[in-house]
Length: 170
Image 1: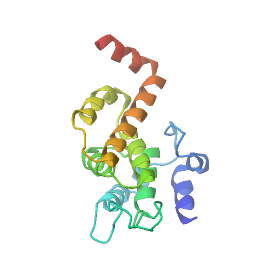
Image 2: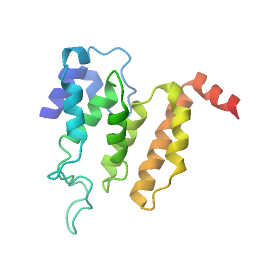
Image 3: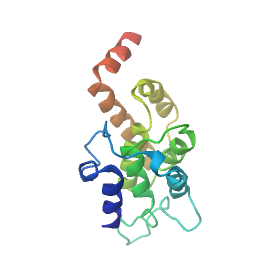
């Protein structure tokens, strides 16, 4: 409930409702200028620490939805997805990309959606190739990469101008 209240306060109530299927809001009342330390906080939430075990395989007998420490990662991913921060996103993109091989399906899905939203439409066709160039050996890593490809393609196909640019390059 606290997470939902935070997202509603930052992004507005209708942006917080369906984070999965909604495109990032074109006009949001949210501004990083109003929260100057938010980017630093988001980076800290995404950085792996010794006490956060979201990248570990669930123990035998535990629930696959038991995300050991993901309480901070989920809000960070949703905020980043809904309101991309200004400036250099290299560090944030790298941290989100590290979540793609998570042993937890929900984490991989949220990381893939966020990774795609952190790139402008112009960058999408350039970013697809590096994702496919190296194929992880583990199934979770492969699935995370495929999720990124799926969301990139969905976004490209929705934007007719970008789709026509990609076709002209071939």
